[in-house]
Image 1 (cartoon, rainbow, N blue to C red):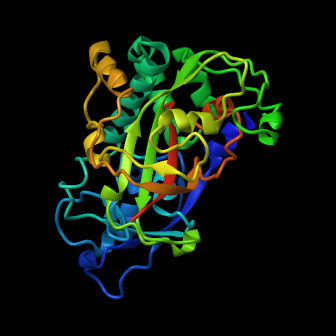
Image 2: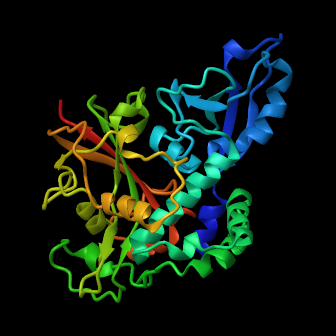
Length: 356
């Protein structure tokens, strides 16, 4: 509960600059300083940002979008995930640029404001419910008032209200053994432990982002700037937790998610194979209105389409979840219970240095 509270209270300091092409008054406005919730989404900041820059905007229809170092920010990805993915060496404040014109429709799918974000969230929740329970009836049958309360709790960062409504969805949870911390496993090789962990069998919805870098670097602050989404592979695949006589750790989960990345011996002998981020993600504006549609997405989540395949050795430089770099020996059930986003997906960012 305490860990979840920290996740929900997490925020990223933003320094938001208006793009120079849209400045119509001198002197140009100073950047806006905003604390953005980690679990939130960039378009939800519009009500704070637009009034701040309104006096200097050119005439026309406003369509807000953001970029970081020239990369358009995908609005349906939680703000904290964007930060973890695009800022390997955390930049505080995070300097991003806001645009009100020239929406990059070739990179970003359309966003009609809060409604688009809301339905993207609800559809992700339906998808997670199908992965966890085999159906999404409880999400689809939510009353209008419960749906509104759930969405408002996410927008306002109200964990108590969120738990009150989400408990009605009866989505699976997992017994975790955080008290043990798998201490024996940290002292033994991964194949020799006999630590008992009482974990319910279940599936954890995962969204995995794998950033591949060809240039050599020793420290994160020396890492080359990320200049396009093509360098990021996106994988939507659940992890199954079984009741067994070994402690199922984050390391075990990552090996399950990315068998082609992990060798049996080491984290530093990897192969990168993924899917293009834009091709893999479905349209968040699509309304998932039947079990059949969600079932198709849920089944596809088990697959790993081969696109943008890179078959060369490499080295894992960083694994980041909710802004932290967890030890690989941590019980995965604890991670699944405490570090998930409100849509019940666990977002994991992995940085990989691939061989030239």
